[in-house]
View (cartoon, rainbow, N blue to C red):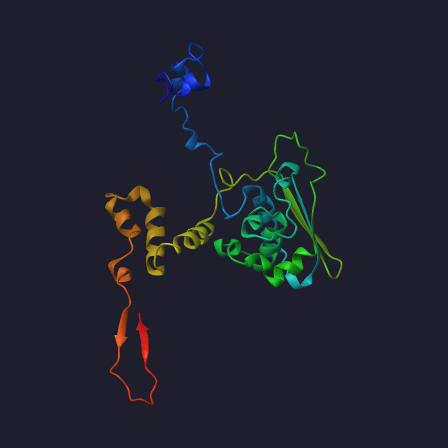
Length: 256
């Protein structure tokens, strides 16, 4: 697929203009997957909104900010993070994923961001709509477009009593390297995702097994936990009752 007459190198470079041997110079020294720059995406929305989400969660957690006490929210991401996430009042689930205003409002109000927050009419939540009316977003004046760090954000909250609180991060590209997700944060994300496919009873054992993957002696120990158990595969049974009298309502129900 690389070196064939119509392969990648010929199509994109042209005959005689490439040296395949250079592909293998310093091969695996180091592997990129081992680099500190490899990070996990903590929240189920555009990565450019994550620095602002993290700062909003810090405010809620450390300063005990309550949504009912907020009079103004200022979101100041790095300019390159704002261009595609400036959706003040998202009208669709997809717009909500790319709305730094929406995700910050959610973080401040509920302290979490889940898959369900970007489905259906979640973006029309009255509590969130109220906070969006109090929210402004603008490029951070101290974060230049050509700066080395381009994944920063500051969130400033003004309370009804005039108190002004803020949190700022200059560079937060996902969660990894020197800022890995905690076991609790990993569990929150894993549980939210796994619940879409697995029964609740299987999720915690699978999470624990994956956290100790290096101790697995047989991969079947993992794959068994990935399968929906036979108990949960069994279809619900319909209970059929004997016919009732003419004046009695027909009774039918489903038993799990």
